[in-house]
Image 1: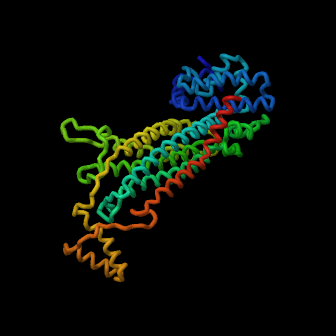
Image 2: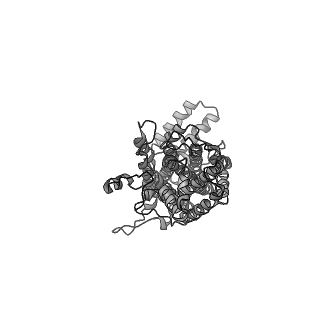
Image 3: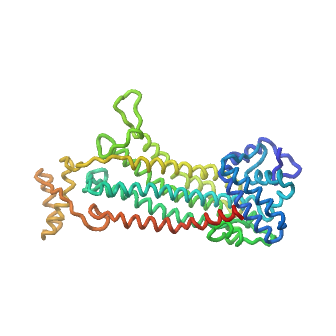
Length: 446
């Protein structure tokens, strides 16, 4: 059995080890390739400050590149008795390089290693989320433009209110996603700072070059204060989880609307048959299970920031094992949200919209505001026009004029989809993913 990095002469109790390791081996598989990238940057810096000899650097880097590829291929495993991903990487190195492999831990603690791994992982996953969110955004904008002339009822209090359109409905969710990306960009900036070199939270007596590892890994800056770098554990995850929960909230609301508008009592849209399921006893049923599950999954994601808060709340400065549990709820959320975004994009593209909905007489009262505004434009005081139309509705004599002529920005006749698209693209451009991509590529070819 492999020895722990911290183990001396006392063999850990098996039950205690099982309890303290928990799901760490499973969760650390998410981090394997990023642990290797962090180690590569670290050993390059160690060579530059003389803690690794120049002739030792490339043998270590070559073995790390092999381990990286194993991780990228999904074949990386943490062996039984090996505590975590950091131990497994060091074990693989020492198996190939002997004592040379043990040198990579100089100037590091597993505390700043896992901080780094989490940030590199999160940075990469945020990029994937942004790209998938953009695909959904584009699908919504396309639908908005396609159905910009198709009217539907707008609601307040679930009561028919005023004329709306499917152009507005689809476009509203697109713009909501743009704001969600703005919040995610702020979380990305918190994530994209280098904690490496903070060690156990109090720095190192080695003359580490933290700016160098920051540059090698493509971070925007470093977490300068070593204590704050450790205090960022949990904080970064909470900020990112909160931003992701914003996307989930938008999708949950969209899913609710779609389920409601698909129901026979509304009949505004038709979901593609392949995204519905039947009943075991009712042959007519086409249930919107995919959107219902989307709603539930999104609501579950929205609980994660609260769970993280409860884990880290009231902890003083310094490292605590409590942080380990965050990985169990934080790391898998990216895969779940990516699945949701992918399926939602596919469904949106295949939704059919019913036309001429407002020809139904039950929706006649929603044109009352148009009539009030017409009378006001002709000189009647607004309150008098409001009362006149209200009395006509009560008397059953109101005759709606269904010709809608809205032109102000963001209304039925002027969706501003080009402006919304430009807003969203500017947000995506400001993530500056290219810097991190280029740094990682350079690191792998160093």
